[in-house]
Image (cartoon, each protein chain N blue to C red):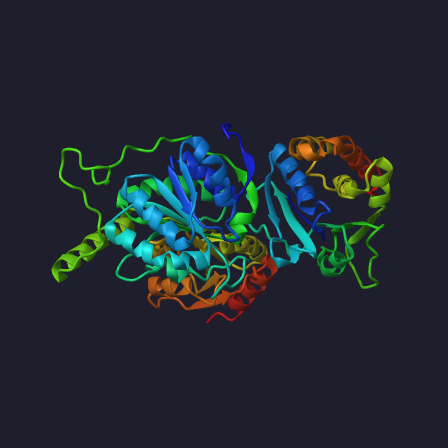
Length: 179
Length: 354
């Protein structure tokens, strides 16, 4: 088993943190994991992404050319990454922000009203957790329990008041995602 | 940082923690991306472990502080990235001539010039051929995973002391910025200052550390002496990894980040029937000449992959002494090759073999 997950959006949307939760959950489950952030000049005011690879064997490339799973948090990332997703892969995107282009995309599309769901749960800012929950529906190597444990471990004291909303959002995303 | 369970760490932070656990007593450096997590971590944790952290006014100052601390018998390190390492070359030449141990981390970024902050391997020549003026070498080790970076950093202080020579750990922005699972080694105490350290005259003879040798025959003896150590390194410190090299008819030679990306491409190529393997030098100086020659024994062609315009490929050619055709593929400027791109190159090279 080796799953590659690319998460892309604007800086500030929790792109890197979402990847951290996923990677930490993988570690808790005893998998091999790599987490690699984009750290180039594009981070300021532009798009930001991170690559997470989860496997049973030591990971070769932490760089992903064709993701099995793609989480899209903003429009520029759709144009850049949606065409790269594997044909049998899945693109999970925040349909409150991202409008899929008409171009041919082979991967399965999983639209999620992540901003609206997060807002209903208590805070629109945690739309990233809705999308992560939706990912867990189809990413069999990571369990919801491990993701929640990882989230509890990683959340900074500054955002401790958002933890319950974050946890609810994981469940909401999971429930809304088509298998 | 007391538990030994596996944890996720960034390459840069893991290197810093490994250095502290190895008994590093002093760190001097100047900030530069993509290695800033190393001084950041050291600033926070080294003083708590009883060590000294000092942000110097420049890389030139930092390496001379390293020179001084090493001369006084401390376990000492610095870290930087390409342009900063260039500024340290004079000091490294002095330290090598004065025969002092220290550890230098170079998380390479793209160049030449100020270049960019993205990953590159274009400082291979500078690292393995000496780098500064005069006849000397650094012991150069190139990890490919965060765990290997930890293990190599931990071992590097003792290697530096064994040979009384600087050890350089050559990584890049990819290794420094990525997170991977690591198990940390136990905390080691630094040894007492050795009998050559300038810790004060007390009752013995004055101890002098110098790199000035005016007399030609004395300087020549110094050169011969330090090169005798390098011959010893070539016997004892060669490190490499072989991946599917038995029966490989196409052999890839790559180190560091590029090697691990190549592994993914090699797995795909083998699934498609190409008999390809990987030879990964870990010690870049001393270079694993004999081991590479043996690994390439059945190869029809050797492909060297680097994030440079072609540097290690020269050492690959020197090792193979014309026995096997050697071709090269590289990306530069901070562009990291993808597995797909390398797979395409593997197909091209295999299909065009002589």
